[in-house]
Length: 494
Length: 95
Image (cartoon, rainbow over all chains, first blue to last red; front, side, top):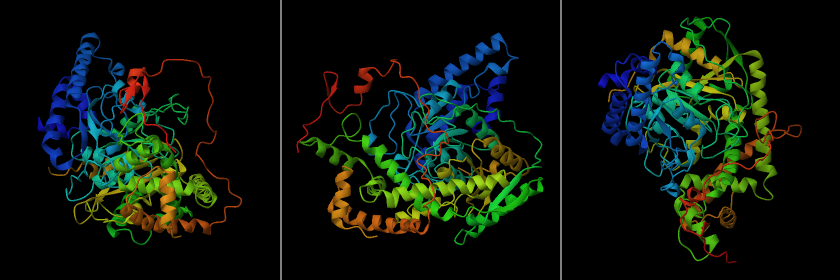
């Protein structure tokens, strides 16, 4: 049964169809592996084994019916039927507690399911648990989770990255072949890089945010993890699409992602931005990323220098806009309708005490930052100015994508840092995201995938960014790269 | 850009956050550092630039608003810390 964990998503699907094994066996193997490894890795806040087994049995029933009726027509089988997956604990799943990594929602049980999660369920996936996250998705390591940090399977003294660190760690450790995350400033791409897996942050509006607990509403994107671009593409295709319940959801069809076994990248124009290869990056990160770009060039791509001149302003822009939006989005946690309520004589004290007790330090910091940036007298100088610089950052990308099809760069300045490594300095942690923030500000898609290991054996990732709604180009490029390299097939020994 | 303790108190009040004296002092320092850093945005001339409140090109779509199925009252109240008579029970608003 140990072999089942190492199968790719596609191998699992063919195996299920052929009857080599069934979903119950696959799910039990996943649950057993999770039970064995999660006391160390802590990928999950809420395991859902009974739900998973029920769903697995339903999947097996569906396969049996399909075999009886028409075993030649695979096209009418749901695309992820019987596959165990995990979901970041900021996405609602009806009747399963959703904590957002916070004490303030410790006992909150959503009465509805997020659209992206429902799409996974409709595709037949089996949900084995809700994964750990920095509180309300604010953080880059899961150290801000009120439930304790997750660990990087490559070196368990190190962070898996964040905020979707639980999902990234679970996929890297082969607990599940796919998991959902969310990315507001890099929270899918950075943990993907730290954990040596492939992670997609789709174009803003490509995947419905209905049921994603809001952090920064103009920045949030539901994304996914898998062990290869081809597998991540399947997850992406499953969750993408218009949703009338999300008014920012793009009303355009989701193209079927065609990935060829021919690794040629002839015709692909890759832009390399000088602003992303600055001093201070770990030398091996730059080395591996440049080597990967060279591999793609060898496959026929054309590489040219591009400029994204406002890159260095992305960090301050983000740390004004995201907290501002968060201060509004987190105003709902007041102890009135749901979540923690601390007792008090008067209403306002209930608000203050519940929020004071229920929110962690980073969340409080960002709420305060955002409140200040939006407050009377400061709005124009801070939030207003940030919004204008955001326009400049967007324009940088629009300009660049007139000359190139994708932009290639590092995901993070370093490989995975030690848990506790950033001490008490919030700014130091914020600098982790310098290369990922711009994509959220501009709304463009970004794909992170492994391109090597550093001298400590820690994964190094690379990022490809594309123009709006051009995820297919990103998947195609990464898939080609993954056909002539094998970084993505390496697994940590656990 | 250094915040005073009284400014921190004011923001915490706006945000309805109860902070200990310790937290107030710590956040004063940390927020001042972050705001100081954010001041580099002032370097840029944005007089001709439109703000981006969103990256949606077309703005938000409108739709008709017909009555339809919504959440059942018992589901809405299920997470309530205190509920009574199909209502959320709260302490009085005292000024």
